[in-house]
Image (cartoon, rainbow, N blue to C red):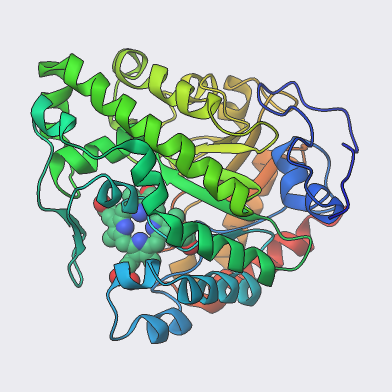
Length: 371
Ligand code: 1CP
């Protein structure tokens, strides 16, 4: 593989230590990775969280007759779903088809996705003994070899200038699923555990971090050239709780990821936490719909310090085309063409979305931002 030298002054970011993994020149210079590094791009890169999923007929066809987890564990199928969505939408990056919860299964928690319902983890972690009973982190990361195989196959099938994003759930959000035993609205069990036995909480966070570091690095070795950490539910915490219960662990996770590979930290309703999240070492901060993109960018240090990703309301994809495109223009206006903006939704594509709307959005962002 030909290697490339950095084509612009590296950002002030904490982790961008240059082209350490020796990415190919087309990848290094891709719109998406340039934007992650805060460098100018010929157009604003765009991808959509949950771009492969139930809103696509192709996905529903592949999924029919199989459980969601079986699909995740079949590298050929996961590759097919990832590549199809990327190509059909014409987006600037692919994200590997998988789920954040497979890590909990690999740590020994039985996981199921019942039709139409959210996930269930039938042996919730509710005390220190359950934390200690979790599996060995290195063995858990090894057990996820089907993810690495899907990444190898996907990278082989992608155009040379399209990066693949690897991902994981953040320690807080994974702990919340492990403790609740599934989805939650108020996270009462999680907070009871966290406040009631901080020692066990920190032990659980450490066990997760020790698993997620080799997991993400194996994804990078397999070919992921960026990673996104989904901290979907961390917005439920106050700043003080974030500092006490989350910050040290998220910081340790980011510090353990191979240098030179951009890290996107994403959470919803995290406007009050974004500077703290950025301070954990993110190269890119994910901005959700409820949060002002421009104000938050400045709060995290602004362009030149960090890149931003977001933040169109996914519900706009359900409405009339004109309103959708006007909404996209508002996001672009907030970013104001400043280097380091990656266009995305504020959260994942909703399953009722008409895929044509998603495709029109991608084309619109590309057309509007040619520079
Ligand atoms: O076919 C089906 O029935 C399964 C639906 C589905 C899909 C397509 C689930 C179940 N997960 C996924 C894929 C998925 N999940 C991806 C694929 C890549 C892509 O974006 O195209 C990713 C990145 C995730 C990540 C994920 N899973 C998150 C973080 C992102 C977010 O939305 O905040 C979370 C919280 C999950 C848990 C999860 N997986 C699936 C469900 C129904 C849930 C629960 C959500 C909840 O608790 O409300």
